[in-house]
Length: 292
Image (cartoon, rainbow, N blue to C red):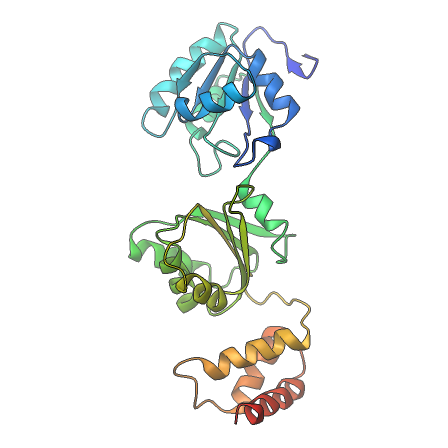
């Protein structure tokens, strides 16, 4: 039974609450209400969550629930829910379980048929996708790639023929390495890198993988968590002449491809952009002539 947006059952309810990923003004009214009225908050990092609670004037007991203690904590939370306590589950930022702890808790609670209710809100992957300019009708979220190069490359290679837009989380320390490997394995595709979404130094770098890599290569430091979006395989997007010329210049300037013929470039790009081979051929000749 629901009253005022809350579950009222004999057992308690586990609320999976999304919190801001940066800008605290993105906190929903409902999230504030739920956090204020639950009996306990299970947080990925209690110190981080306490800052959020203080900002909104919420005084509530917090306990940790993270990758190190989640399995044991799930049993403890289950007992409290059985006794009628309502509990909110939060991560440090965004929606719990999405590349964050919480899955073991939710699965264990559901096994006992106790109510689990989402309190939706911020999510970095979806926020960036909405402004990426890439197809959003079908996407594949892969989260963080493995740190070991071999495993990382294997996963990327498995995505070679995936038609959906690809979404990855990555640390600022590894983002350039990951993009280099994706460029090598997937080829140069339209992409967007989102950095520090909703925060002070929020940034969106659009173009293709090579352009994004060149942009990052010119920087001494890269800060903030990154979200990378890559066009899926053989997805045809509307193309204008500027986009086509930019792709042709990349082909002409790419190391190891200087000796390729105009026909080869025309064939490859006509397929990629779904335009006539003659149109590409003519523009390649024109750009070659302009470059001397």
